[in-house]
Length: 210
Ligand SMILES: O=P(O)(O)OC[C@H]1O[C@H](OP(=O)(O)OP(=O)(O)O)[C@H](O)[C@@H]1O
Ligand SMILES: O=c1cc[nH]c(=O)[nH]1
Ligand SMILES: [Mg+2]
Image (cartoon, rainbow, N blue to C red):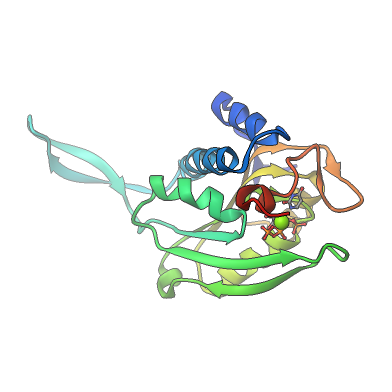
């Protein structure tokens, strides 16, 4: 794994991930904790956004203080499971526009197909943060990021919760310019394309379907 892929050393993220990995964790808890992880991952992956200085007044006096130098990046949720991360990401970036990309994997071929594309018009003036908890074969992330680039995003980042080595390699090969942040790097994919040990089907666990 080269430097575009990073797993932060973060005890809170790790403990929250353990909670949602547990088989017995119910859907309401899964969704809440995924949102909390979305907030932490968003803050972490955007820690180097360009800053500028602005003259402000505090109640006590004037100071030069840092502000963001560019518009906030667009948040793009890969449906369905990315909606869980999005909820927390919006706590950190409440003014960011939001895009939705509906992708679903065919269970037999593992190919992702697109059923919804709704991206903000002004994406060309912004960066984008693509959110999807699972990076398995990498097919969904590769397709999602290609869409976002096609819409003109100036720079793209990708945050997930669990990554498989196969998915990281595929995504790095397809989009070598995209930083990838994951709460964990797991062992491998199984014969059904699920991450081992992973956490199961994130979309189903988030929305109580199966
Ligand atoms: O890296 P890949 O092999 O493409 O797999 C990862 C994709 O699989 C899951 O979505 P899924 O297709 O299950 O849709 P869902 O969120 O609606 O359940 C997950 O949220 C990713 O989008
Ligand atoms: O383990 C996996 C792989 C793909 N999608 C999921 O939701 N989980
Ligand atoms: Mg699913």
